[in-house]
Length: 289
Image (cartoon, rainbow, N blue to C red; front, side, top):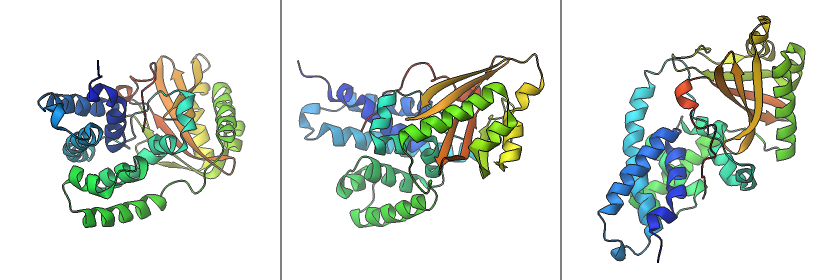
């Protein structure tokens, strides 16, 4: 018996939606909405189910993204993508791991809805311009122009250089070890002097409302939990969005921390404390291209 194409490509569809939205909860909703539309289609008349399904998901994600963009304007403090637990093998697909990283998803937030859709479909999933044009409802020539602008925009804002997975893991381990002990000097030594930390509490959990600049201030904020001796701090190493990262729990309150490593030092720290974004840290997400 032939498997339903929707089931076959479900992981791909979730990945497309997640990269366009930065929210696993919203991506799941989009996939479910797309399933309802697929169920009404005569699949025997579809020549390329994969392309057809990606087109449905893209259109649903674009609709949702426009709504989310307005909602995020009223978000309390900084908005960060919802982190996903992943298995180490996701990192073996370098392009996939880069595209779902917290750093890249944060950059994608600076694109408009159409630019983001075109960038994701072209640069991550290598879709032909003609298929992208159908998905976003624009002429192929316009899509090419959008793709070029989006590519230049992202290139100007993403980390300047890639590091080996082993180097990234070693730096993250040093960083998390310093968090466990609350040693401010060790924290400062693993971060670049001009490091920037972005925290997301969503108005629910305590978090800096604006980016924090400088290794000294970032280290003091991250090490603050250790100033009260009775406060237990648990730090666990895990893989988030295709990269080594950490889960922190201070007095029962969880947080997820991801970093960008350049030249052996941490240049960006992404700290998610909003509990509504920390519900997917136990079961690995199925991400694929």
